[in-house]
Length: 412
Image (cartoon, rainbow, N blue to C red; front, side, top):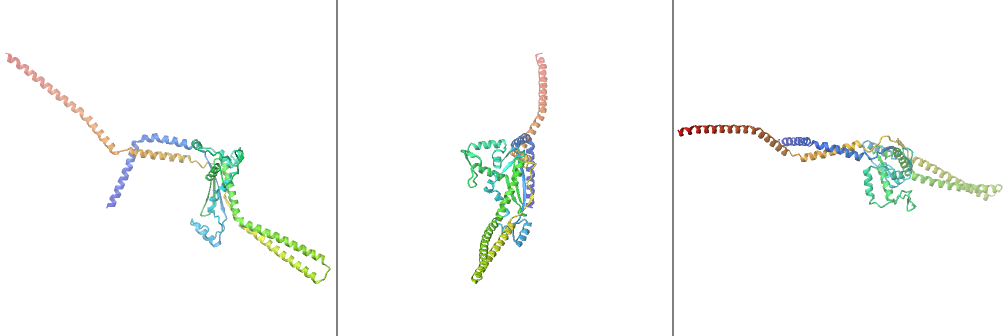
């Protein structure tokens, strides 16, 4: 019973609160009429000057190396949205989950500085660094903020190919300048890499104010990431190929040397029948055969190393290629204005609810009713008073007339 009463009371309180808020909104309706247009104008002044950006996306499906049993178990786990990582026989130290970290590294970003880009009109061809440093548009309020911050900034270091004190400045990933660090951070905000943990599909998205440049950088980042993964996967195999190639070349030289020695000795001792010469010829022939066997063995190893290198080279399936976007991806102007108006509506409603006092409203209504009642009753009272005054005046006049009639009789 107590719980039922408590729930009923809570419902009544909620209903009273909603009714109170609605009453406050209706009494303060003029505040909405004033502040909502102002909020809409402010939101438009903030969001409209912001330049639009375009996003180009590339999707890749890399080849993964794993053991057979472990690979089947990993695929089963991935179907449930789980990732078993490198614990089940995956021989790669750099998993697809680490590819975003590779792209966000300073070394990878600085390699993008010197990429050649061309705008959509085909009028400007420059480096990606110069495009980000000198050819970016910004809103008026962003310019004001940057001008204010530059007052406290005394670092004026130029671009990597620019000059400082008349000397060319190079890009050193180990020690970047302040301006280079700002451009590197800007690249980090424009390039996003995500990996689907279920199917390990790599998505690379690049945003830029120019649609053609966004597509160009997306394709370049994809190529650079493929080159990095290929270099990592095939680094050891390439070393094995170089080592096998060196052994094969040395073995070939030794075999050719032994073959020439055998041929020279055989030609110079053709007509000699001494057993010593024949045994020496047999020794040279055996030496040549041993060198030949070593040469063929190293040649086989070289071919096996090259086959291993071919096997280790990863294959990438390009699911979605880079295309020049048509529609801008940001900013979302309608959403921004809607959120700004909603925030203003909530603030005005809270203010109206705080200023609204139901007790004062009730007192005001009661006083108004009393005043109306008093205004309705006062004319009747005035009429009654006037009638009473008229009666008293008539009585006084009658009394005076009677007195005047009695005085002559007394005189007689």
